[in-house]
Length: 173
Picture 1 (spheres, helix red, strand yellow):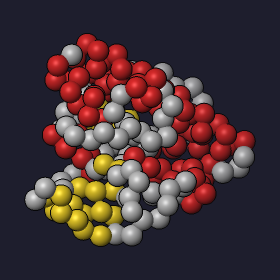
Picture 2 (tube, helix red, strand yellow):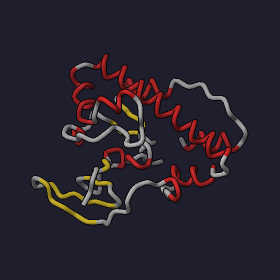
Picture 3 (cartoon, helix red, strand yellow):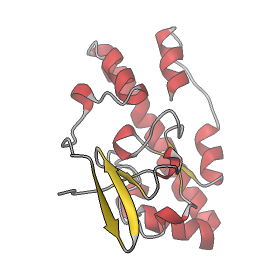
């Protein structure tokens, strides 16, 4: 994602890449900053991780693809373990749809002269005008004996766990 912003700024407007399908085959799903994506986790979640076993949220809260309409993170976690072929198809559909939407956002931001703001939203998590989330307070909770740190609507069971395991909690109080 970050390299695409840099290339677009240099005038490159045509891309051809197997990245979306390759990372899908390896259990990775692309996610926006609203769903835990950032530079550190390369805007993806590794759905095999146990943290997604009971996560009934959308893969990406902004994605309108058929995979996101019909499958949760929990579903995808189960599929990668039980039906890798089906998982691969669904993950590829999602990742390609995510990237098409991302590129459409870039085109719109260029036309609307908001490219800088979109880039900041992705790369600095400065959501600015692109943010449609409510600003959540930071706090800690304990669920089933697991301490969770909630920071701006994102939680992790242990602050030492990498950002690739971050999950957005829907409908926080």
